[in-house]
Amino acid sequence: MNAHDTIVVGAGPVGLWAAAELALGGGRPLVLERAERRSPHSKALAVHPRTIEVLAMRGQEQPFLDGGVAVPDGHFGMLPARLDFRELATPFPFMLAHPQVRTEELLERHALALGVAIRRGHQVSELSQDDHGVMLRVSGPDGEYEITADHVVGADGAGSIVRQAVGIDFPGTDSTIFGFLGDVELTDPPERPGSWHNEHGALIVAPIPGGRYRVTGSAPSVPAPTLEFLRETAKRIAGTDFGLHSPVWLSRFGNATRLAAEYRKGRVFLAGDAAHMHFAAGGVGLNVGLQDAMNLGWKLAAVQRGRADAALLDTYHQERHPVGVALGEHTKAQTALITATTEEGLSLRRFMADLLRAHPGVASALADMVTALDVRYPGAHPLAGRRLPATREQLHLLREGRPLLLAQEAGPELKDLATSTDLRLHETELPWPTAAVLVRPDGHVWAAGDTAGQLADAMAELPLT
Image (cartoon, rainbow, N blue to C red; front, side, top):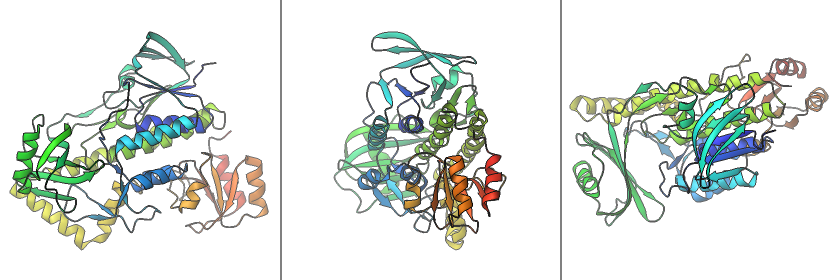
């Protein structure tokens, strides 16, 4: 028996959450990370409502809420008509401004508490698999070694060694447009976070922890950014450079958009940036990656521990690949709007903003899409695959990472069903006119029925053992 049944490659937020889910499900995961320490820079700052729900399902949301700033709205393509999150059907109707550095700290603490092993400074160089397992060659501080596991999760970013080693195609487009980012100090900051958009480009200025500000956006030409470039660009777009000084991080990013052809190949799975890359629009990348990890983690643990048939693993690609397709489409659409600086482009932006203001339903649909609250997986029953619009207390019922029976009224037949299937049963008000639902560990409906018998029949069709 392998000492570790799953090796997760990459100790970013996605890899850490995947490993935590595996450990919660009774697995023995090992995380291998090539960097010797966490990056001090926060690539991502936004935690969206659905991701906060994911955290709440494991009782991990409060430290994020304590350390973040709730923002009641968001944007689509930096249009001036903001997306109002306050009416979203979630106990967390806001975007949480939370630096990735702190996100990784909290997720690592959670993973370690569940017994996850993490090795930093260990670079995977080769990978091969057969019917019995996966072998990896790794370079560590003490030299090269080989290690085997039943499965591997590649959460090692857009340049994923895991994806390349197993030969998964990564089709898409190369970068033709670039954005810039600078974490700096300002002697003359704006009174409140703001954005500017005109023929000179797009600019966002927002506070970040440590008394600094993030200055980010796009311009017709973006070389490797310097402090002088940032000053000149801010002055052209916003009319002032805000007294920019003392940068701690300057970066450039492109609009290359790619999607893995397969999220699974044999015993190897991809999640996060290893599976999809796109322009940094709306802060969606980290959130979709964590939701990938949530979808995969409980399934892989259930199969490894004999609670589900191996066919369950096929649903990972079936469910998450379409999410990746939609991610690429709407981030490309946002890129077009952000970089629309010609007369025609500016007219398009005004037209779209007026449309959102005149049709609140369209803005609400965009808010649901950007925050991933609209994600629904395929299923036979009309409710199957739908996200449960749960209260915070209902989300906490999933803390054990196991399926959960929720019923309007827990009668004798439902109690017998729960006992016979070793499932926890909880009586609660449901948002739909049905007697009971079986909720997956990731908060999506797995089966539903108007009677205990109907629910039992639906459950018999699931890949449960």
